[in-house]
Image (cartoon, rainbow, N blue to C red; front, side, top):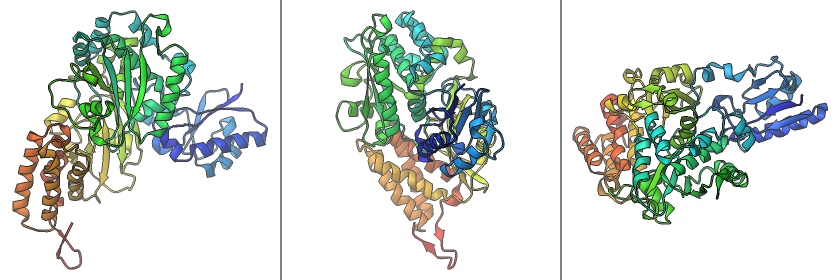
Length: 523
């Protein structure tokens, strides 16, 4: 059997030298007279071990990591091509690693296993079976499966996916659209990117099924321009899908058709909001549209449109393949299925964790994250992106569930979880939230456009020691105004991190003094 060597080709692995590692492994194999098949697979999502190299010498895949270019010669000398365990970087069967073994990978079951661009690989690992089931159902039958699964929008809003699809199905129109929101802009998030780079046919399959469900024949993926590797891989996957009959007219001889294109955003965070995204797709400035009408009734080019996040659409093939119950059996309460949690920030073991809803924050932090990379005590966790709340230790026993988080005034969002050790200045982080909004606001509504600017100014006055008590009171009133008066979640959520610092970490939102002189200093 030819020796197979797997080296990931996703953005994270590439940034850590995966291309050079692959080249060196080929050169070493040639030097030793060994014939190897180099496979550029996707990442398994264990980022602290990247580049993760796996070798199959006939007895299964054996992992090494993190493999830097400098480590390649000694690894080869220690028997890498024979999958020997005689090196400190040897990890054995990576699927037995506690980080992976404790997960419930439904959406991400293939990442790291396959060549992302191989349709045959995708098919052999269960791909297209959901589509085959969907082609046997009427549109209403597909929608019912999604409704019964309990799937909710994974982009952050958590709106029931099946209800949105039902609305579009019921809307009369000569043209309908499926729009995938791949404008993954939240700090510490990367799950959408992993789907597009490591399992792109999964998203394609999910979008085709969505089209069959609501009667749409055209789809668009709105991808952030900061993801060039995802763009390249997904475009290649689209070409393969067209050439093999999975896209276009009469897909797979079914008499149905579906076309799919990618459109790049231009770096605007606000275009993660669905109506701003639609404006941008139409070639306009990305600004929020008032609702109603809802995009499901009047969306892209005024037509009924499904706008779903990458992870929402990527969950659909599993639901159709295995049935709504198999998906709904995971989770808790109204939060069904699994969630792609993304560990980032000051974390020892950063990466992707897919688990059913109900895992606690503490379990995620300790069992998967392994604590802080700095070794210092953990002080706060921010969940739900840059506009999510800062959660203190007293809230880390909270199960990760939409309703449980809402009771705390927190958000699950897109599943990003960012860790901060005790050296963090949360007063500065609160200021950052307001400053972020001043930069990223679309400018359409006054509470967001002006409120965020005033927020920065008020926090600066507090930090400078200028009437701190009065300005703290003013800051609280300003936050309430932004929450209640903003047109969309951009301005409405900007106060969340600020309010959480005021409530849980008030000592960080006080006048700053010089350690030497004890004098108040400006922020």
